[in-house]
Length: 168
Image (tube, rainbow, N blue to C red; front, side, top):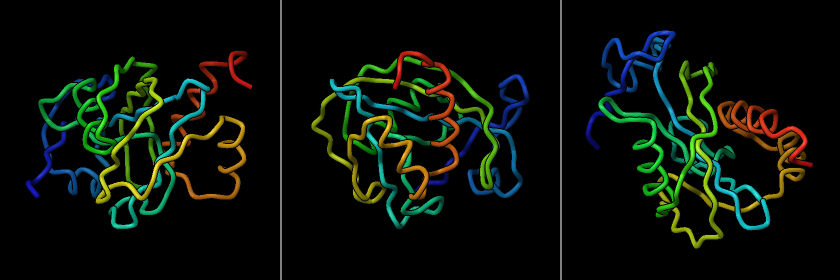
């Protein structure tokens, strides 16, 4: 596997440097990530169970797809790449919002993209244990008893907040 370089950004999300992914996390440097929510025709959200072999949040539920924005890459390019890599999918994505999220391992700007598809999907077994569609109320219940990545939780809360009145 080649070394992954991430753009280091300032509080305005302007690139100010370039660093290896591991160093970025170790030092808590501000960088960029993407999360993708895929909804089916019933309005259910596709959840991903991260592979138990992942270095961050193994075996946790998370967004349909997610990942870092590599140095020289746009948020949109990163979202399309992660969707293809993790789910074997090519789906039209729209930017929903951008948030500054900090968690135990990450200090980053996250762009949340939304797309619609009933599948089929071809998850990459090295990154994904399984995927499943869940209604929004069920996800809220699952979040009380299952492990979810902190970044998913933040994106989900922002998504719900941005759709108040439109969701149950």
